[in-house]
Image (cartoon, rainbow, N blue to C red):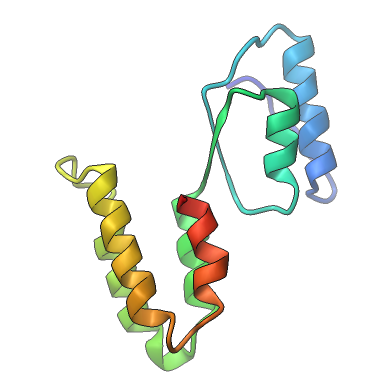
Length: 124
């Protein structure tokens, strides 16, 4: 663990300051940042550590998807997402996951057209 901070509110500017502080403390490079989809966090990561890959947290993504659909579809969508994101299965590779995610989006975007634009950049 490199840092523990407590901000009264979460914002990209706070994250930029925290990432800059890590640099000031001697961190030269970060390979991967995993975060929620906070507006502006990608820019904050890129500004502080331009070579860092950025990935959105699967738990946040699943929650975002489930919270954006009708109550009656939540069980089916939650079940499909559990199949797409098989975290405990070491035999699943990223290509398999991506293909299944695309299939999931294709299946549901007709009913929920807002899913596609908000989700595809996450995994593009």
